[in-house]
Amino acid sequence: MTKQRKKILTVVLLIYTVTTVLAQGNGTAGINEATQMVTSYFEPATQLIYAIGAVVGLIGGVKVYNKFSSGDPDTSKTAASWFGACIFLIVAATILRSFFL
Image (tube, rainbow, N blue to C red; front, side):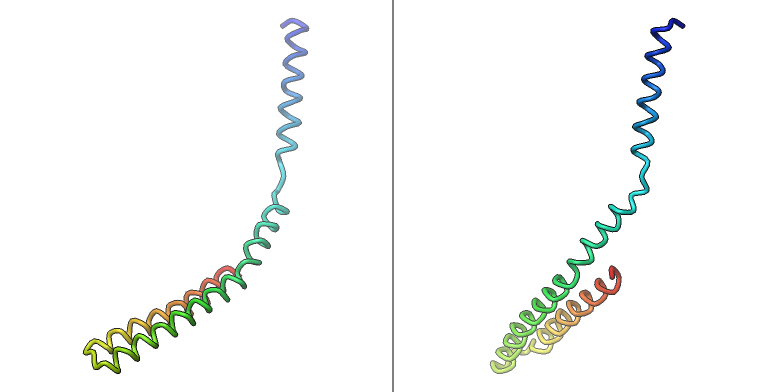
């Protein structure tokens, strides 16, 4: 090998080593920051899901009342689906919160 080739090879290996060493970080700071950002959204998201559940509950209650007052035969089916939707929203919010926090 010529001197010129040895110098070029040495420079290339040095640059490769430096970039590899700089790229070797454990990433703990980035992971902790991402975790903090995600967990900070769960409290407002949980409150939003509870608010949506309350609105759905009120609308469903009015719907069931109207069907019951008019003597509609499928009132029990409507009441069961409304109740199931409210329970699902509450349980989903609670499970997601406990799973991620």
